[in-house]
Image (cartoon, rainbow, N blue to C red):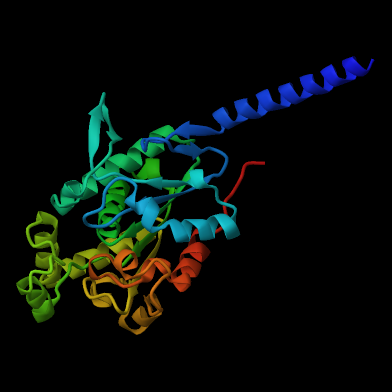
Length: 301
């Protein structure tokens, strides 16, 4: 009788373990990033885009402190965070994100936006139809996500209505990057801050010197808001590459609310302030604003 009880207990344990293993398989799908799986339990997905000179995995790494904040306080899991690629490969009639290198970020801005849009379409086709996407782009990533969202809203409004919930940019040169004499001096000193040989940077500088581009961006922002996308653009007061004037979309009287000041983050100057950006990624005030906009994770009943 004792043996029978032990066997029965072992059987129940095996049954529970098998059931949990099956649930783990069903509740997640393989991401394009090797070794990562996407959770299917939560309805919200936070999509990250890295900046200039980034490579595969950098967006997840640089924004790790913020994603941990969401996990610890808002019910998110590691599998709720996705990363777009700047390099996608044709697969059948569509595109699949593939590992990318810094050189892929230096292509034209239109090319970067197209690759990011391919990545978003791939996630849209892979995940449940009611998945809601929150886009968070750092530096070049914010520019690419802004343009990609605009193109998706224009080309496929029915497919994306109610699915693209928020668009958040961090130190992103949405209006271009016109540093004036300071930028010319940095280039003359050979600091490599502006990546003057990259086509994307040359285009950003040209946009920064074009009054017409600022008008177009503001008009596009209004169209995204009218579509139902909540837009948040944040800048760092100490950023020497992307000034607040080039990064924040807001009426003049409200821009100060979106320009944050804070001490250097815990990772140190070399990692927190890549290529002259301020410590915005480690600023907890930024995390609070972003989390408030995105909201807690939602689970099916």
